[in-house]
Length: 177
Image (cartoon, rainbow, N blue to C red; front, side, top):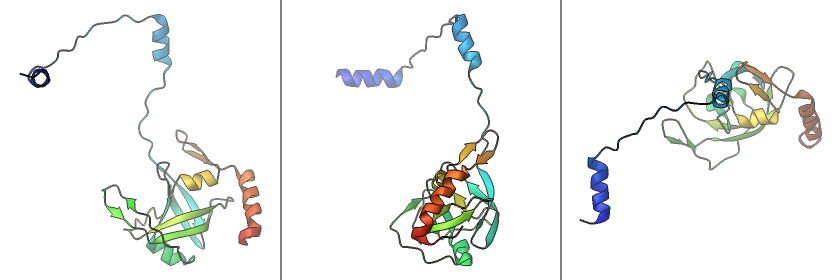
């Protein structure tokens, strides 16, 4: 019998036993283990109120795991905020279905309190959740230089530096503040 076949037969037919020993730990290791942070439960994603165009949204999902900003076609149609540019992008959904967005709408002003950063939204023809309509991802939070404290459920925007950016872009795009 070839050595490889014998090894595979032994691996499949015999269970390897685990050797368990008790180890005494020193004071230094005990101090490190005790000072480690404890594992917390999943705090989930968070929602914020915002205004897009003339529509107020009570809950817009901010998801730190999303790399794009999503807007359902229903919301896009009701806002009538321009014509989306075509895209060849494909999105893989959670249920592993590939969807093709209808387009991308650029530089949509999203108002969160007094803070008004621009955001690019991917328009997707999908089932609408009327409680949470839009999803803001990492690009929106990065534009606002957002500081996210997940444990305290706080979202802080660095308004001063972002307002400078908006004022610099005002000349090029015709925005008013």
